[in-house]
Image (cartoon, rainbow, N blue to C red; front, top):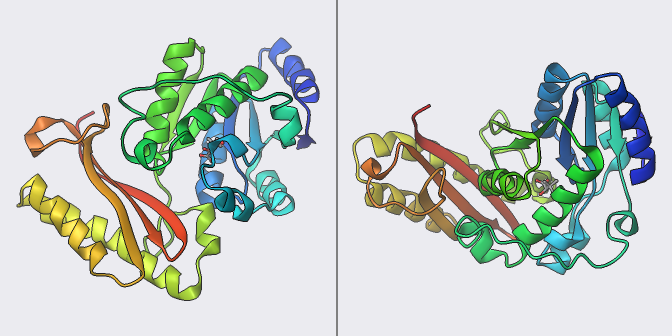
Length: 283
Ligand code: PAF
């Protein structure tokens, strides 16, 4: 496994692979890697000849300076994990390398980016699009892998690929959970023991809501989740929305869509967590 930090080195390596007709898979990350990331890398290793993983805490997607400052940075451990799961190249650039000058590009993915995370974290998806597009230009992968935990991000990346006409297949991968149900997240390491315990209410409520939804209306299911979270001390609900999985717009009845997803964001103490559950998916 090679670890490089400049776009020039990265392109040099990848041009050689491309000249030999190798298929390139790409997993963009912000590091602090866990088994959820490992599953993306493993899938890429299985489906491509070469797997590139970027490790870069992207400042332009943080609308909260403290969140950026506190974001865990663990490059050495990340490289050990990536070596174990078979990554070929790790790209770990500096901020100056990725942003030699201010990135003034402004994207619009409306209406996908005007709701949920887009509404609560102004500028977040613009920053995601800035960095992911720069990484796509640098890596030029055949396929890129994103987790479904960031459900809205995945939809926006697909839209960005369409708008910018990238010839890249976007592969969405299922949420990986801890044994007790908590969705894996780099932010979980920031939870105290107590908060970690409370955070379990998120997945247990979402799972329970899937049963509840079988015999109850959409409005009642939404209220069921909101009440469970609001009744748990230490959790502060930011939103729970039941949306069409393609448009990300809220729906009112189960029959309004064939693809129905419940998306939640909340604070557990000071740590912001997100999760989601699919109520209906017709493939
Ligand atoms: O999902 C993430 O970790 C980040 O948003 C991404 C896609 C690596 C861009 O910084």
